[in-house]
Image: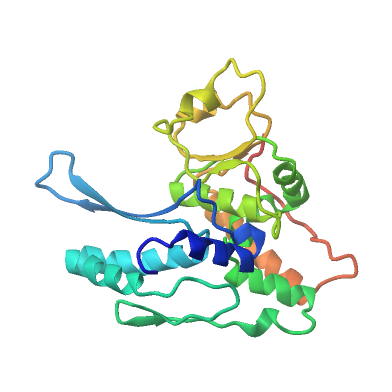
Length: 279
């Protein structure tokens, strides 16, 4: 995209796209592909390496998939892959809302056109099927354990209430946080949120202080068990219990597809059980 998008291109993009997808000059979005490989030559027994992508564009699904495609090639073939990809991405045209772009990267063309949401009328089951598969933030998959509480979660995000998401990995907690933020689409979340919050963050002391008179309007995703005690006074905590995640997701995924095929007159779920703990 000609390196860093210029300010005029920012304005043009923001004027033509939904408010929730506009560029905020105060924020960058980071995507990390983490690799850990066993190695007997290193005292700790393995080495770690990460590839990080930074962008001002809030296109979560797109950049996640782009990094998942580029990173394995980089780890396999080394620095020349990054040099080639950087050159190709620098030649991309700046994004314009409503314009279909063919984006060349690593010998492939990125182009996906799905007309399922451009029909004059879309039935509700078809709409949910689309989002289940193609949602920008994978919000249906990420929030499956809390579907019975989805209305409450929507209200918490809409009102800017403090929320903490505790999970076993950065991938899970960041996906859930992004999914929560997307619940109020097409509105843009007006407060701070951190998909992956660590003890190295500048606001660590501010957010974890026991002397807070008023909790901040923020949504945090964390994995460090240290935060369990630090956030015990927060009113809204979502916990994903390791070992139960796959079972919960699988169960709700089956229930969702059953719901799509047999939408009853009330449009309600029947017999759902949520085993993920919530405080």
